[in-house]
Image 1 (cartoon, rainbow, N blue to C red):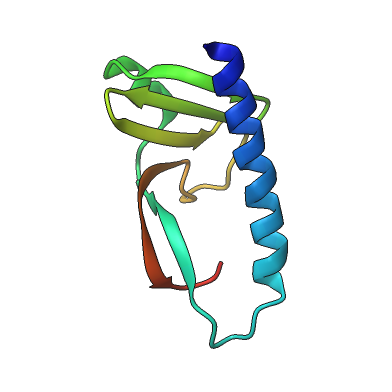
Image 2: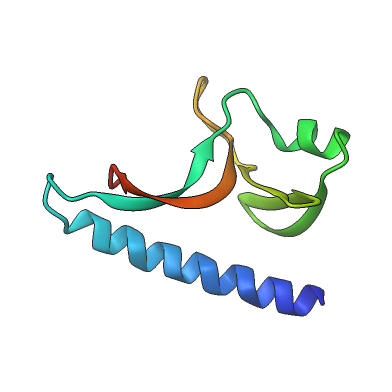
Amino acid sequence: MSRILRTAVLALAAMGLASFAQAQQLSPKSTCVNQYADVPGMTAIKLIRDGYEIKAGWPGGLWLQKKLETYFCNTGRQLDGETLCWTLNDPVRGGPCQ
């Protein structure tokens, strides 16, 4: 099971990199589908203490899950005030291409 999850996460990461490269080439008037929402003030350790399990990880990031709630958190060093974690949501169209 964890091997399948790891493979799926790697595939999603590769697709994310391809989407990022494509987003760099879009015109300023373009809109994109977004499935992540910033969670200001959230950290991986807060989620772990709240009962979330690490489902996948690699240097610099963790996927954490509790029931149907899923988060991605950076584990590297970030600048003060930067977002460390994002929640995975249903895709929403018409958002900014970042």
